[in-house]
Image (cartoon, rainbow over all chains, first blue to last red; front, side, top):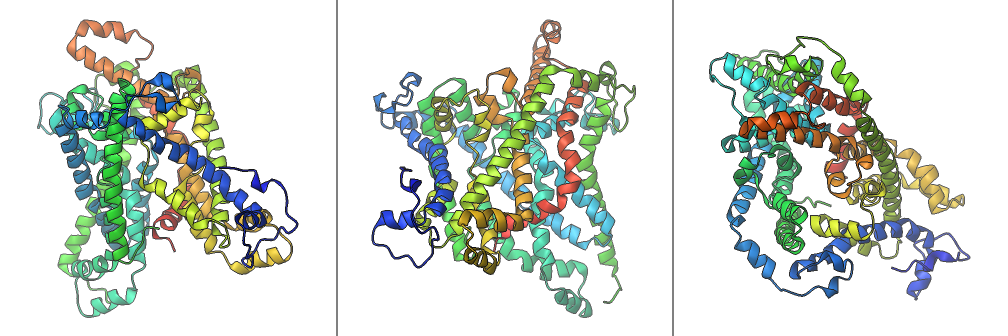
Amino acid sequence: MSQSAPKQRPATVTPGPRIHSSSFLRRFMKQWDVQLMVIPGVILVFIFSYLPMYGVITGFMDYNLFTGSRIWENPWVGFKHFEAFFNAPEFERLIRNTLVISLLKFFIGFPAPILLALMLNEVRHMFFKRTVQTLTYLPHFLSWVIVAGLTMSMLSTENGSVNMLLKSVGLINEPINFLGMKEYFWSILISANVWKEIGFNSIVFMAAIAGIDPALYEAADIDGASKFKQIFNITLPSIMPVVIIFMILAIGNLVNAGFEDILLLATNPVLRPVSDVIDTYVYRVGLGTHRYSYAVAIGLFKAIVSVTLLTIANYMARRSGNSLW
Amino acid sequence: MLKRISFGDKVMLAVIYVLLGLLAFSALYPFWNAVAISFNVGVDTSKGGITFWPRQFTLENYQVILQDERLINGFMISIARTVVGTATSILMTAIVAYGMTRSYLYGRSFYMTFFIFTLYFSGGLIPTYLLIRSLGLMDTFLVFIIPSMVSVWNMIIFRTFFKGLPVGLEESAHIDGCSNWGTFFRIVLPLSGPVIATLALLTAVGHWNDWFLPSIYITNEDLLPIQTILRETLNANIKTAQSSAIDSSALALIESSKNTSSKSLTMAMMIVVTAPIILVYPFVQKYFVKGVLVGSLKE
């Protein structure tokens, strides 16, 4: 990563596609000003993205904090930490929770914004439509700390609106400590996610719907098709390409069950059997109990699964005629 | 258009309006309720029953919050971090993106692969943490700024936008003797208002809302942003509630510690932390709608 090349200014400063220089250095020097735009970015990405990739080799060592950057002084242990993870008592529930939570997010969190976009599209009162949009987009811009705080407040046993409602309609006699009971956690987590993102994620589907040729609807009207039929026979098929692309993207993300939301909502250790996913486990054993190498190995395991899924997703996207980049 | 709506469609529309109304209400209610609680006297809140309006109105909760030096300091850190972090990241990323649009850039496809690879694979939490540690960035303000300075996603969005600009403008600038840097600052940046606004907005929100990185990289209380402080306060409250359920005698002890606060006080704090976002939200709404589309539909 030598930066000495751009230092002296060559006679010609106007680079252009016409340059056919034989030597790498001369070609490089001719366009030092453009290289100077890109190289600082490359260096930053190298440091903060590639050096940590290099750091994953500590997953095959017994890393000791005192060796610092002299990583090679740590003893090699091969796949010890991977084996320890696969045999850990938590392993099964970690995999199960990761899969269940991400699948729930996929099957509920993915269609919800499409449904919202379809419903908004039928609304003819502009004021009502804009109000609904404004209110449902807003939660996207709140931090998870705030969303978790509001969720806790709503579900609280102390002046929590949900408990108050359930009590007033006579469904319960005593307030329920929703966030302290395992059976409610997944529903709460998914609801909070849908609440936060449904509006914002519907924007792209609204745009896709707006791009549909109005003549299609007019023809359907003349032929006497009901609104309901129009949704299924015009709107949905027309936005399918967009839906498919986003679905593929979501599949590439299946291994990410979430992190911040779980960390903030599952503060009660009682919830751990249902809330613990790979990411939260890595965080806890790595930064909580300082088992660095073990945590690095688990992180690497997850990253490999993730790359595989993303590659497959991107391949599928390309097959469907839409590259992701 | 024919305007005869069938009975079935009328029912469907009614259902849609009701569902959308409920959704809008559920999006708004948690805030509304939080505001009501934040204006209520703390002791009174614990009796329950606060929904839309405060029962015993008081400004005391906000007075306490706005006089707390730790919170004021956290607020300042958050503002500084958001302003500096957004400005540097947007400028840096845009420059890289502009360089990447030059078709004769030597090594361009290598650079692109180099950047895009990071979207697929990352070293993960622990190696990044150890790196930040060994770089001496722990407990510094720079840890908020430097690691997130180049965003590959934003770079791709910028690049797509720059490619869509009319080529003639840049060409004539070049003919008039404008350098690449000059063209970038005088021609390209001024034409990129909407995409800059959008990406700056999303980056700023990301900075303002981040609580996690400070929670692992910052131990110095004076450098903690407001979101992380809020998180700690919420956590302290939960711990209190949990331990009081286990052992009621412990409650009195914890109650007296400084981190514990009433629900009304916590809600006031949450409203104060959210206020900046709610205040700018109406003015930037049109930008992010545009921006989401730039980012996802591309070309």
